[in-house]
Image 1 (cartoon, rainbow, N blue to C red):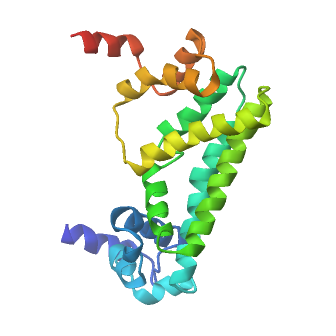
Image 2 (cartoon, rainbow, N blue to C red):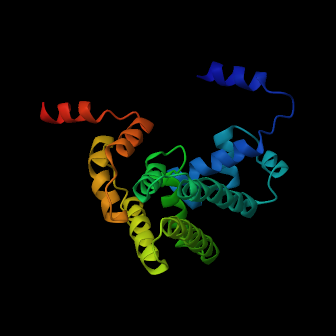
Length: 223
């Protein structure tokens, strides 16, 4: 390990300071692992095996990297959910599947990131304001999705809240389910959220998106 570390250092150009993306990734990892108190300049420098002064080539101060973390959260989790709400769908059931799908794909929407930012918000009014704004933007997108399929504004609002607050409950409680368990519940979730179940083709396309074999899962459950 020490030899690998030495080789890595030798391969770096003279005056290596890392990159903005590298510092931000380290900050995000620290936030997810240990909370906002872990996002401090010297611990991040140690994590990256860089000097503390290297940080200031990319960020003015700690507040700047904290703001960048919030921007990253908004650009990933919030934008992913809005994009899912706006994605093409033939039916409201298919549209709801698009929304459920984004929560299942942690490369698009990362539950741990949401959980960490929400925990941070309890300690900062400014961060709470950002979280509140993000929640409203997400709800607006889900409401608009329902209205696109003919639901009146009041019903669209309640259905949007049902979809979103259930998912935030999953995140807040840190609920972990196997993919098979989640997939088994999805038709009933879709019917509850939209008033109609997905048809067989919609469900098959959804399963294929996640490489899920429903028949194999049934066979395993019976074995």
